[in-house]
Length: 104
Image (cartoon, rainbow, N blue to C red; front, top):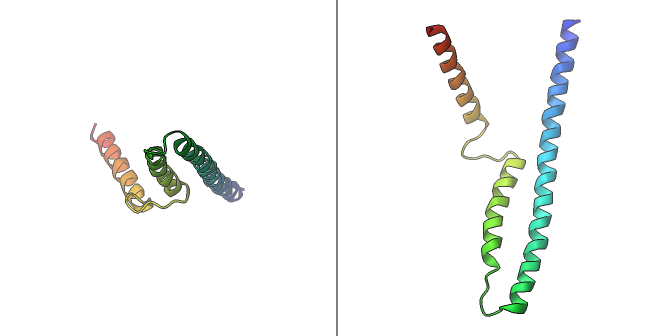
């Protein structure tokens, strides 16, 4: 009975992780659509009212950098601080906490 409950719990956790991943990707696509629509609007305003200076690049660049990082997070692409790094750090902090508690 306990084994069945453990399997159901693991299945539920996998479902929760998958759901979180899908929500992240949906959020990214919503952000991407907003990025395109807003920046097209800013391009229109820029070219219509002040075509001598192309300022629309600046908000596009700033938001684009944020969008890049959002996409990297949504699609689990972390070349710098990946899952291995996260697991090592978690283990390190847990070991430190364990040592502090046993040292008292």
